[in-house]
Length: 70
Image (cartoon, rainbow, N blue to C red; front, side):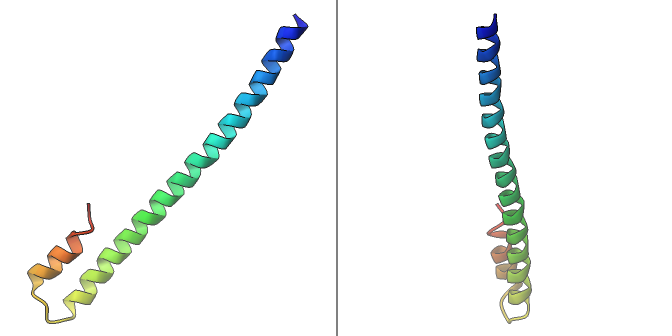
């Protein structure tokens, strides 16, 4: 009985370590996703504003700002 309790305790400790490691990786991935998404929005608006101030055809401005959307 004591052996199985020690095995269970060891297994539970391993699962906690794996869960913590995996959880941290998931949090980092979510942070990277949202930072990248914000950066993409900023760049899209920057390109649109910059091209709108020049004498470029509005169709090209719309195309260039939408090209990075997907």
